[in-house]
Length: 240
Image (cartoon, rainbow, N blue to C red; front, top):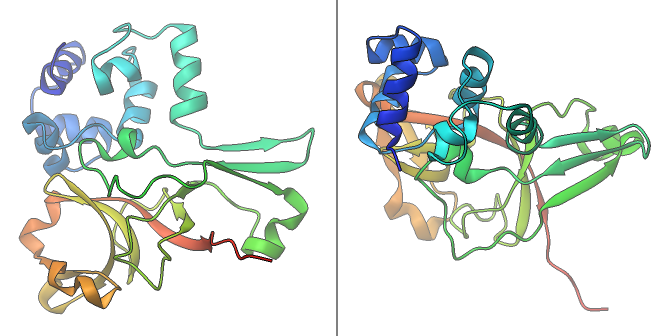
């Protein structure tokens, strides 16, 4: 099986791209992220895969994993569009919106959250006429489900809960809880602005304060923001 670096080099060759910066511009990502791809520190996320899907004839599965057909077929393209790149289904027949689980492997590459905390819920189906009452909006573009990474963000995100994450946010905006990859490791952490352009990476649970760290301005090209957490739904059952 070819490496991600080799597959990207083949894409670059076919499209006349010479430098990592040119590939970064082509995929609409940072040069730092491209450098991580080439070193094998992280995989292709769904946003650059979508760019490659729009601009090339390469199969997204082949680019991301090195498996399947190298070039797109109608069947392969349909699979990518319905299962990998779109996690929201709006059913006109049942008048409901279905939110699906965020694909950590596709979006975060080799980084991963705590595997000891399994997925508790894979889909949520909400009547369209209840969206405003439950969530305050009918616009769920980019919103997906995600389980917590253990208890490091308690009490903000309960250990047994499901969260809604806005995956269309790919840059640090203001203080909040984000899904990030830094130096090849993926975290669910609070980001906050510090002095002199520093970004503080914080656990809300006081027991994990020794895992907090800072990202300096000259390290920002190694930071990948996959989304910002929006809401949390506790999933504890009570006896009756």
